[in-house]
Length: 354
Ligand SMILES: [Ca+2]
Ligand SMILES: [Ca+2]
Image (cartoon, rainbow, N blue to C red; front, side, top):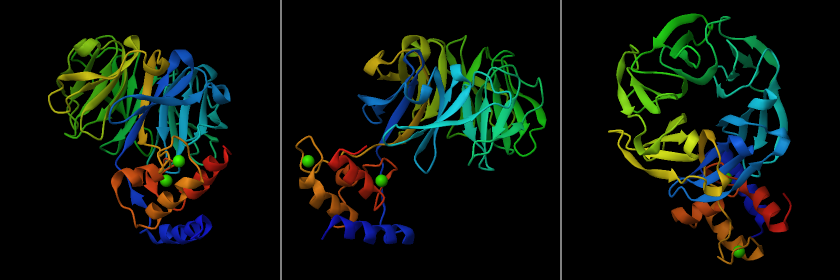
């Protein structure tokens, strides 16, 4: 059977929802501020894989990063005061997506429940952009409500929770109107807050830059719970990004030590330097994203993707081969599923066409 036939079968099947084979493997994409690059690491071992984006599209001082379901990467190019868009597989630049509207030195971004893009920077307001076109919608939060919006997350309320870097608090805003709901979290030593995320226990975890810790606040009341990651634990210094990984543990980028550290997701105890200091040329990590791992398509195991790999690739797409490692290998377009949408990328890689 030709690969063209396979593509046709699986595109139809994918539409019906049964052909795609979901994967568990993930990678980390880490923004390396000082080198202007985005680096890819194995989500299981933390080993360096490759430079995903290297200075492409005018990327300067990369900070906030999110991946969307259509496999696009949106990255804050802080020094250019723009949000740039990239192909999640090749890392190719798709140009500047958003900018203007008063956005300066953006460091944090997230898509909202309305599908629009919310970006925080060095100013006093979170700016909203059309999530499809990137056009400026306008300031979302009231003027002066924050001083450096360097962390954003939508959460219970529904509300938008914003780290206000210069005032050492987490502010809360109505997720629909942007109206201020006041200070949500403060105290416990919170100083120069950066990334924040809601954990599996429903509480809010906030990177506290100046105290080199990750503080936990009650997810409903905002009351200080504890220093979940204690000051300097595991060498933590100037934490920026905080995310719970697929293994349930907490990952924290340690900007000053150029590493990503891992902590027990229940106790907060230091586990290891998941991404070792300087690995792959990492200098000054800021935010990071956890994304589906890319398959190599190299079923023959000869270190290259070629015609010899077609039978193995077809066997996965047709469902004859359901071995997890093979399914992961077939996801060459890195969208987390092995299906007909991988055919174009597979053929491109085989022919050496980016
Ligand atoms: Ca091969
Ligand atoms: Ca895929």
